[in-house]
Image (cartoon, rainbow, N blue to C red; front, top):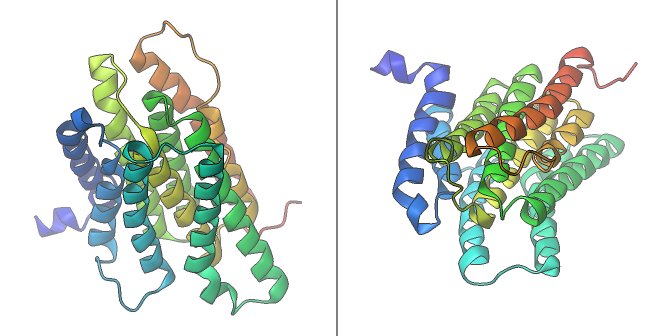
Length: 274
């Protein structure tokens, strides 16, 4: 059993998927299935690096923010319905979270590099959070497909950027989104996503991608392409198509964009587009 649990495929994929699926099945009827994202991410972190908060490194700040995101999402879904201004505030808070997580590391880099990486992280995270909440939160299949493609895209890109641990974190997010989608595909009925799901998956995925960029070797432009993955889930699909087919098509759109990001990370690993 110990050998099994030490397998990266189990740590980043199987275990987070199983945990997320249990959460979805238990809490989905209560419109809290989005909590599966945090559950899967915490599972991966437990196996890969442990669930500790001190000293408060950049990675552990991501852990803190990944716990705060679903709490804020639940408030947004059930207490105050965010207006356009509220969504803009959520996006700005996400950008501020990225700055908080990585500023101590960026402060040790040359000024030009620090501002480039910091601005990229903040813009990418803010865009993902704002777009997903505006355009995807009301459609659980589109939101789930975006999370699936985004998580896997971030995970593979992080591995190409020389960060296996962050790669497993990203893949765990994709596994959570897959677990969120699966019951909908089987039942043929859409569930509820809301900010509980979209804020959790986009903020955490954005921070993981930013971590792979700032702490490892993921090129900065790869994060900007990854930020467009949720846009793919907004592309049209046949309205009368079965839920499973919509999920497949929307995920495919996201995979194409995520694949382009991974191709950039693989083809131009030194950060020079030439």
